[in-house]
Image 1: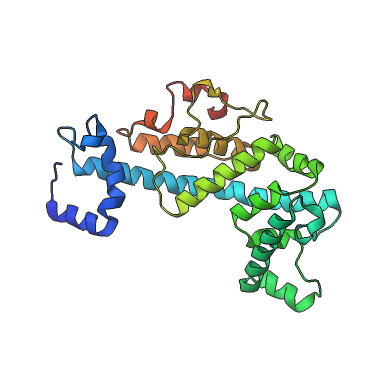
Image 2: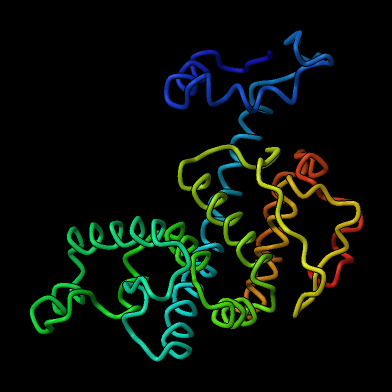
Length: 276
């Protein structure tokens, strides 16, 4: 590997770690990759460029997923209260299909409430006699993953449909996409490589969506591009004036050497209604 300044490279290896960087070296190996022979002319700067791109991509994704997560928290709590006529529904077993899963979720809720230092939780403890706060407070102290567990365990098909319908999806697809976003958010949070990853989860495909969707007949659903489409779809609903498209295009323009085909993009992707 060609290096302009070996001392600087040593510093990067010490502070980033060879193991983490090795994932970004891999694309520069000749075939077969198992021989671990670098292509001629490969530079350390090329590897570092991929690393920097992936880092900026994760930051972009994390910020956009946050908007979706906040919306799902609010919609889950509000529609649940409206449909069931009970602002404490999240902490009542009667509204959930699987008792064991409910008890596990309730244990998480109790743990989060006990450790929470949020002013609104402490104010509730001081001023109310109920054992648990209302749903809109509880959803704020739970992780994105916990929200997914709550939704997927709701006993009322009508309630599940109402929540999913708010996002223009069927419950099966909504649950699948929620799981995908939770998984992607956690990867971004823990600084895992995402740009060319072959994700384990295979998202459900909507037969009919409320807003524009993409032709996925030639799309690899286990690549990041499909997940970018999911984010774009949700943002249409929860943040209509979002500029995710512009941010993504700007990022790709800043790193022209990155192979977007390895991310699952096809040549016609910008012509899709979803991205216009």
